[in-house]
Length: 229
Image (cartoon, rainbow, N blue to C red; front, side):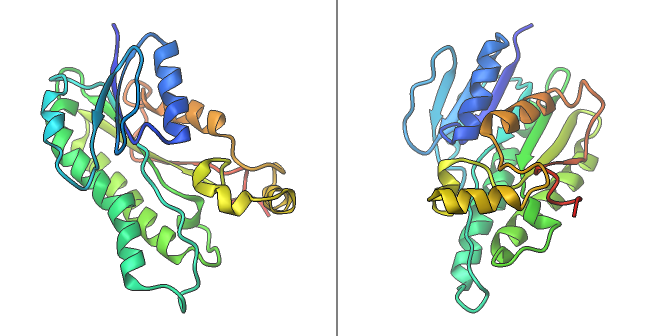
């Protein structure tokens, strides 16, 4: 049976890679983005997760999986950081996810239930210089995810992935030249930075987490950075 999978923030590079995997499997992607985008063999809703979500009233009654892609990378020392910047990170990384779940929960709980995937960060559990804001907001998302997994079991499985630095437009300023790329690669035990296609494969697997007896987990996809020295 064809699955209906909602991808919030599908214009992101990782979101696009996941959508490609959904299509390749013959399933139906339902994609949202703040800006318009064409979605072949799927559905599209233009929205901001922190604004009016009424367009999602047009969703199918039952959704099989949800991926929340929006995120930010704000790296500053605490001396240079303003509280409004922390609040902005919290808004996109946590509050948007909260709003989406509240809106589509009835759809997720229909039929056989669903799987939900959030994208966290290696910085939550690995102390990293200049990462206070991103670690705080993604930490809120991880805590939300685990508690939500307990609350929604057994109907809905909820999990996170926690990647390290990945080669996406969001990280472009951190990977602006060969010297920076090489330094970033050498920080990871597997001597490489994250590949969006590799992350997408892990995420795609978790979109069937309920079927695979997995919930309440944060899966590290970080080249060994968080556990190997």
